[in-house]
Structure formats: structure tokens, C-alpha cells
Image (cartoon, rainbow, N blue to C red; front, side):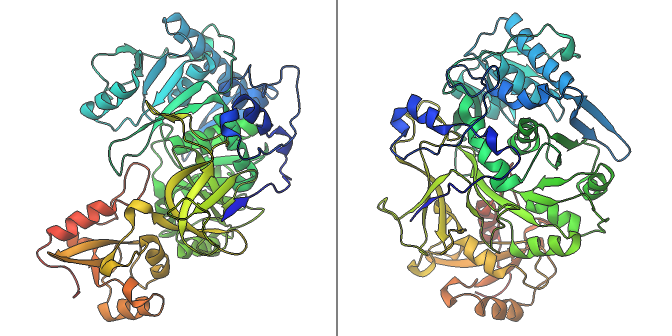
Length: 543
């Protein structure tokens, strides 16, 4: 099944969508699928000119027209530290000039090892402004971890702060305290297909992979503005994440700045349970977060949020009961997006087209998506298959470090989905997470969606475990109060075929846990649950 969304774009900034046809002309190897064409306005210097392009300049071009507008506010419960667009642009170009003065050159790679502060996005954009390639990494990585990862990509230096672990062999740079006062460098403009930045995959299925993205990747984010975020220049988007998270960098900072909006980030002193107060006091119109944060907010009292228009969710699957509970309490919807390090988000619901309950949404405007069978052919409608994205999408990675670009015409994501008659896609989990009890393939995500709302269970996850040699069964792990086994079995039997029903129900407390174990991006670590369960002398419940 192939899905092709070229619906009309009515968002306020629709005219700013890049002409993706120019990408195909300059990258014919990725043009087997006809490119989307959307007109773009042309200022005195056209920032979408494919041979004279800079990602950082493109992100900040709208802000340059409104220099006194607040670009960024770092929020506390009692106030905020504000950055105007003028100060933001001066800082980015000042850092670009400073990096060049330190002897770095366009094309060099710079490892970023900074904490949760505005310095992180400033250095990230400042490096790209100079044509230098930032390598984004989590500050939580240990010395052995970051040393191995740096060896993959060969940075010439590291910019670091505090006691964050850094490879000992790298030259260490320390950012000056007032970068907005540094002599600015001009934007380094060159082909939009050149390397812009590197991120690492989460590594939940093995060694983290270095993902190379081009400057044109920012053009691949434009379909999100209407097809997911519903954002315009008048919005104030609050992201719950830290500055040094790629989800925050893209959705929380670069997307608002690209449309000329205001980005709001909670200071580290703000606890997750206090985010609702910050949303209200600082008049946020859009709230971007992850399911675990929405659940924590719903556990407490929520103030009225009269300015909030809607919320955004990514990082892990959004349970239908959580979405419904948020809507009931706040009067606003949560729009979910599915993405990955290799292309960011590409499927989503939106204010213009909300996703059906349980669905991860529709292909964003201009995206070309396919659901393929095991042979690489389009899967029949309604059948589960492998999710794939067209290789001519400007947001798709250049390649993994040291590997060839993705072959035409499809890049398979490793996700399993099915599509209904309207084109909405339903996430069925990762291909490498599929369970096979009794020789029948079963998606853990399908079971979790069906069990959403089990009374007293709270958050839950399923995986396959081996209670004894030669035996594999489905186990459900839950975070809530003790669930009666007969109630849980009846609940599952009413919603799932017998071979999909969990055979054992295990409270997290039996594993010494209070919450589901998660990786750096918030995804549930099923392998951790499986290992802990198989270490137990006896499972909770009777298989």
C-alpha cells in the first residue's frame, strides 16, 4: 500500500515550504518518486537556493524581520529569562565567528558536550552557521560510551561544560560567557545537500549509529508545521524536555523559530508536576511532551489552561486512554507523531486532521509513505507491513556514518504498521520486537493498545518471556495497583484473540520497580522487563 499526501496547505506559513523539486534536480539518485512541488516566496537573497543554503540562517530568517520579538524564554514558576531574536541571531553568528577563530573550518566536526542550558542550541546552530558539523550527544553518557561514539565520527574538537565526560584525546573548547558580543561570522552558504549535523540513534537494539543529516533536513521539517504542530508566528510553544534533547531541539526550538514564533523551555528547577502551572502562567498555546509526562500531570490537579490550543506527543506511543483523559481534563487534544533519528517525524495527527483513536496519524503533507510486505512489495490495505519512506524526502538522512546512502526508492524504518481505508496508520511495534508465542507473530503494541484502560493497571507494557526452558509466553507488566488476575484475563479475552492474551500479569513492584524502564528517548525497554522477569524465582500470576 502506497500513501501519497499532497493535500493543500492552509497554514499561515504554507508559502514558505521549500520547492522540493529543486532537491530532486540536484540529487537525481533520489528522484525515482516524483517530488512534491510547493511554491516558495523569494526574498532579496533566496534562502532556499539549493547551492547557497545554510540551515541556521533558514531557521532564523523570520526572526531577523522581528528582532525585538521574544524568541526564547526560559521559564521558572515566578519569572523568565528572555532572549530576543536579535540577541539569538547575534549569539549564533558570534559563536560561528569564534569557532572559526579557534581554527575550525567548514566541514570539520565538533562534538557537543553541554548541559541543559541555552548554550546547547546556540552552539548547535552556531557551528552550522559557520559550516561546521555539530555532533549532538547526551550529557549522561559515560566516558567509555562517549569515547567509543566519538571514535565513530572523528571530531576535531569538543565544546564542553562542567564535569560532563569528554574523550580525553580531543581538544576542549569552552564557550565565552556573552556570545552575543563576539564578532559575527557571515552565514556559510553552500549546497543544501552537504553534511550539516550528526545525531546518534538511541542504541536500544545495539550499538548507537551515527546518523548524518544535510542542511536540507530543515526543509524536511516544514510538513510538520501544518501536518502535526499546527504552529504559526503567533504561537508560544512550551516543550517539556531539556535543551540537549534532539526532540526539544527540533520541535521545541527550531520549528518555532522557523515560523517566527516564541519557544518556551522550563528551567531545570521546574518539576514535571509543575509544568501545568508554567503553561498557565506563561500563556503557552502549544505544549509538546511525551506520554509519561502527560500521565504525571493528570495524576494531580490541573489548573484551567485557557490559552492552550493543543498538545503534541512523540518519543513513544500515545495510549488512547491517556489522550482521552487529557482531552476530558483540559478540553484540548493531543496530536501524536511518529518519527526516528533518520528522518524525524513523518506520520502524525494534527489540528487540521486529528488521528483516529489508536492511530499514529496520516502521512504529513508531501510525504510519500509505503507499507511493504516481507518481499518489498506494497502490502494489501489493512494488513500489517513494514513502514517505508521515500528516499527523495529532503528530511531523510544522508547515510549512517561509513555507509552508503539508503537505496532507492524506499527507506524501511524497522516499524510495523497497518493502514485503514482512510489512510490512517496504526503502529504495530518494531519488527525486531515482534513476539512469536506458539509460532504465531504478535505485535506487543497491538496488545498494549487493547489493554489500555484496564482498571487499576496504570501504565503497562507486554513482552515475551520464557518461564521455563522451551516455553515462551506473553507477559503483561503494569505500574498500578494490584490487578485481580481473573479481572485482567476477562478484560483481555473480550478484546483479543486467545493467542494474543497475556498468560501472566506481573506488577512492577514484584520487579523492584515503580515505573516502566525507559531509554533516553522515553521508549519502554522491553528487554529490561524480560530480563528482570526471567530472573524472578516465580512469576506473578499463573501461566
